[in-house]
Length: 253
Image (cartoon, rainbow, N blue to C red):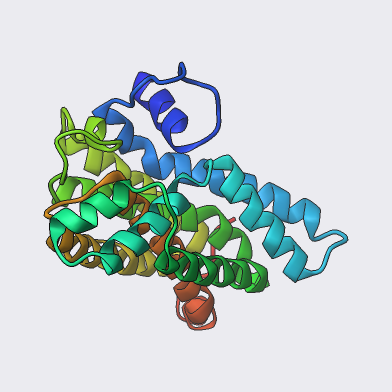
């Protein structure tokens, strides 16, 4: 259970590890499970908030809760990647910009677009699939992050994500896949497996592009994969919900 504790300690604000304690490589196997727990928290908040608040306010509350629960860890990585990937001309320049503490124009524009997209998607998730989507989308995105950790090398000798690359085992990916596939199928029906396939392909494609730009992945790059995975899972879930619910059995919840 130490790896599970490290997974929660690394990805959330829960004080389950000592300050400065580095995550173990096995912690990444639990990333989708941590995402599922975050989704459960969002479902509870959504149920309470929708009793007396309009959808646009509920969407803002859900987004704020997700940022707080994750310490905005992944969002920060996405912002850094916007500056680094689009502001540099060589791999060395891009890696240097990723380490820069200043915020550039690309990060501001990218961050505004990300927040606007998540806010609107969280506010407009359809009633028929809302609970399932809120539960599963953080799980799907964190499985995409796990995929890129397994598929691509790390670009730096030392970094935030370095401990997660150490002591890699096949069961890390297997446990993450079982967790994500089971949650997707149970809460979204067979349509959830369609979302799993789409998010997985997108994560691998994004990871390959980033690794080509940087010479590998970084902690910021993992954050960017997660953020875009969340947007994609919500977007496809909302867009395909009517067709998926008509084509397959109703979600099991």
